[in-house]
Image 1 (cartoon, each protein chain N blue to C red):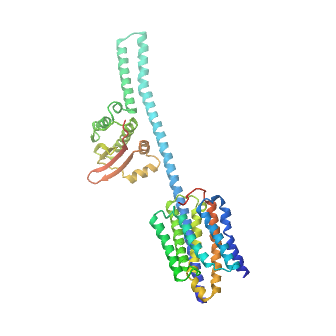
Image 2: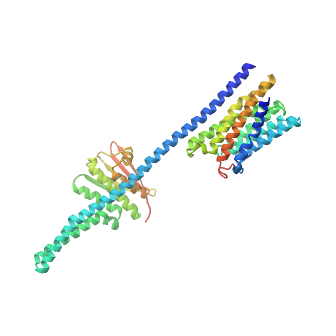
Amino acid sequence: MIFVQVIKWCSILSALLPLIVGWQSRKHLLWYYPLIALLTDLTVHIAKNILHMPYTWLQNCYILLEFVLLFLVYRPLLLQKNGLFYGLLSVGFIVSFVDTLNDNENAFNVAGASYCSINYIILGIAGLYDIMQKQKIFFLERNWFFWLNTGLIFYASGNFLIFLFTDYLHSYNNLILHNFWVVFQLLNIVKNIFLSFSLYFMQSGDEQPE
Amino acid sequence: MNSLSNLLLIGIVVMLLLAVGIIFFVMLYHRRMLRHQLEIRQINAQKQQELVQATIQSEERERMRIAGELHDDVGVTLSSVRLFLHTAARQPDAQIISQSCALLDDSIQKIRQLSHKLQPATLQYLGLRASLESLLETIGKAGKMQTGCTVAQLPATTDEVALSLYRIVQELVNNILKHAEASYMNLSGGTDGGRLRLTLRHDGVGLTNEQFETLTYKSGAIGLKNIVNRLAAIKGSIRFSHHPAQGYHIQVSAPLHKA
């Protein structure tokens, strides 16, 4: 139990790492991603443990916000075509909305979260492919886009199955679900580490999203 | 339930391993491409150096040739004239003076020829078309091969473009004479969409584009490297091709900078 609590707080506070390390890059939209994650995690913790209020709707909102934010970050780099950008964004909203209607606003948005994870995996792979194709980068390990794609692929590929089977595990054995949620938190920590590399190497003012 | 959670765990591990695999693949691929790019840059830098060396060597060779001709030919003749005039100064002699005049005429003629080789007078006064016609005619008259020149009337261009194209054609013609064992050579040309195009056609053994590229990367082939340098200076291009019925074609083109 203590271990689970430690991992939980490490996961929440790991968002501070990219915020501090990437302070110089705070003009870039990507910097707000860990900020929103940190605020959401803290709010969920307060709602769940202190105020004893429903909190899943906050997580669902965060899923959508994260989705929009990452799409905006990737827009100038990979999603310049309006059709593709708005199309994928709309599908995400529709999937989340339909899933909310199917369950209720206090149930975790499984379909939305899974759809977003698939998109992050595709964006990450497309980003790496873009780097390979353009061949403009000399030091790959000093490129902010490489670290963003790496973090996103890692995070999303690990979490995709967890999100997909959340409802199923929740209905059968909550303990197993909590164990997998620890895996999610570990992946979150890894993602924030990669994000801090990304923000560190990012030049302020380069490749700003629209 | 246990089996499901085990399967789920295995699934997550597999997905993560795939992600790691993709990232490693990208890193290895990037390193390989980088190494490849560096190799290409080194080869290009080496080629650039060789091109510069070729220019320097060519200039030095030309200087040595001019120096040799001036010293061995003109210098000797003028020394003889000096000797004759010294003798004539002591003892005036119409024959000695006449011989001195003849030797001076000979020297003047040799200096004119030397000057023409350095900068053809026809190019300066009559233009590129006339110079090329004259060049082909001179070779035809030498009897080694039949030549023809069907270059259309060319618009005026800058001295740099005219001289470079003349020298390129001169070098190509010299190479054909030395290596191609051709019996016939024809030069045609004109303008086409703001570019000047000259096509040299011969029935001997020629080069393909790939062979030309290969030779410019190797050491030696100074003439070809000079062609590359001259083309680069006037933003021109060269293309070698072979047509079974028509023999080898060499097409040189350059932008027409109107004078």
